[in-house]
Length: 423
Image (cartoon, rainbow, N blue to C red; front, side, top):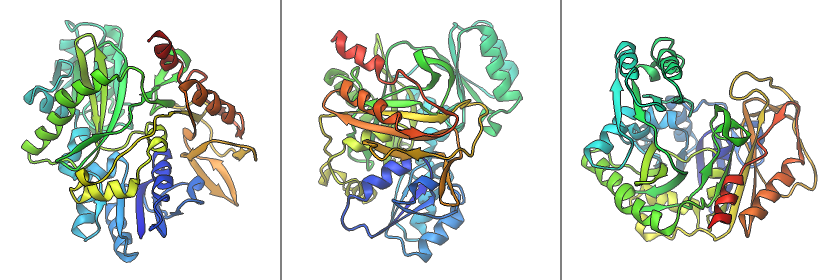
C-alpha cells in the first residue's frame, strides 16, 4: 500500500512510525514532512494547507490511503477534497472539524446538548468584551474563536491581563481573523487530562490518557506553548472518571455531532479538567494532539493503519484497539526563546548509544546535515514499566541529543509522579 501523511511535525513522525509497522505498507509520503523524517518517509515539499496540490499528488501517485493530521487542512476541507477525488482518508470533514475550528461553535454545541463545560460568553466586538470584563469573576479565560497554533488561550489573573488579551486578539489581530470573536470563559480548577479517541461516528474507543505540560518553563511558568512534554497514562484519569467521561461527555459529543449533521470520523481529542463537580470539557481538537501522540501511539499494541481504515469505513467496532499497561514520557527539546523569538540553523547530532524513540519536528536537511528549523525541534520518548522509569530513561536520552540553543523543561512528569505517590 502507498500511504500519504499530511503534516510535518513530531505528531506526524509518530503516526508514520506506527503506520510503518503494518507489513502491507510499501511507501509512505509525508507532505511536507521535515528533514528528520527522511529515514521513515519520502518528504515532498507541498504545504499542509495547499489542498489542491495535496489532492493532485495523491491522485498522481495512486495513493491507497491518506492521513490528514494537522488542524488547518482538516478545517479547510482536505478530507472532503481527497474523498471526492476517490482517495480514502482518515480525519473529519470540514463540517465536523468545526468542533476545533470554532470555539464558539464548540461551546454552543456543549450548551445545547448539556455536555459539561465552563460557563461562557461570546463577544464579536472589543468594546462589549471589555465592558464585560469590568464585572467578570477573576481569574477568567480568554479564547480566540479560531485556530491559533494552540496559543489562542489566555488565563487572565487580573482585569488588566484580561483587557490586554482582548485588545491583542480583537484589535491588534495577533491571531488574524481567528480573534475576530472571543469566548470569555469561567476559570475552572482541577487536574487536566487529555484523552484522544478513535471514532467512526457510531463507535467511540478512547486511547490511553495523557498529561500535557503547556507552559514553557519549569513549575508551569512562562508563556503557553504547543506543549513541552507529555506522560501517559494520566494518574488523575481513574476508572470512575473514565466511566463518567464516556457517559457524560464522549458519547454525548458523538451523538450531538450526528444530530447537527456533522458526523465526526477520525481522532477526537478531549481536553478535560477534573473539577470538584466532575469532569468538564476545556476544549475539543479535531485531530491527534501534539505532543500527546508521541506518548499515546508508542503504547498502542494494535495496528494503527488497520484502525484508521476501519474508522474511514465506519467499521471501528470490528477491529481491536489495544493499549499496553506500560508508561511513556516525552520530553520536548526546543529552541531557546520558544514560543517567542529564537535562532535557527544549528546542527543536530545524536550519540550512537541513544536508546529511546526520537520524534522529529522543527528540522531541515541541508548538505546532508540535520539543522534546527523551528521552535519545537524534537521529542524524546521513553517507555517503562513505571512512570518513574519512563521519565528517567527519557531524560537520560535527552542528554544524548545535541544542538546549539537547545532548551527543555526539567520537570516533565513530576506532577504525575506526585499524584501516584499520593494515591
